[in-house]
Length: 225
Image (cartoon, rainbow, N blue to C red; front, side, top):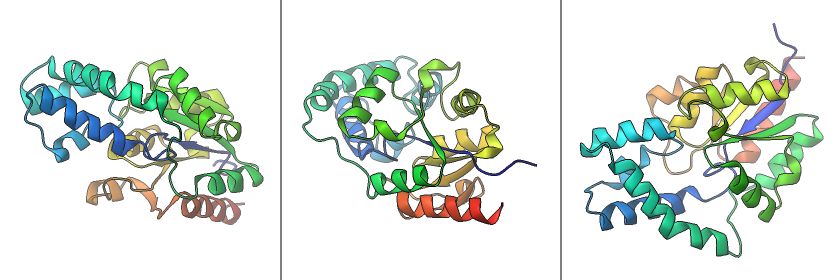
């Protein structure tokens, strides 16, 4: 029996920042220019996927063990300068309202992202979100990225709580799988795709936006005192 919810752990790209569509655009450009015949739907399978899992998935899709790193490296070459020089990094709807609401309720907030730490700090600083978070966790700090549970387990360890005392807010299937496997209560705020039947079994709530998710978390917290 836990003492209720103590923290909320957020994915970053596609959940807090409206950047996943930018990533997907450049994954497609890079794949096309390198001669890989990959559909938009196939590339969506790579969202939030850890490196080793990405290699295996791309091998499954293309037959090549080298395809993932080739496409990813070229995508970064095309996209990184755009992100570094972007005047305003777009936010998902109601993100600041949601974070402020949860902080006001005394809930600790953390980011658990596939993005490397220095870039996470840069993006959250430039968007004015970094002040809301108690911890920033990169999947580069653990053995296995999403959909393995490592990043969520590590985030809970850093917070000094059990996974059952945390909600996880995600936009993509691999992130939901990671959070659920760790034992966190997963909420999905869909970005580019809706949850399918499999994902609906793994989430406790499908939210319309981040404020909707925050209000659900607070209601759950209040009702389990």
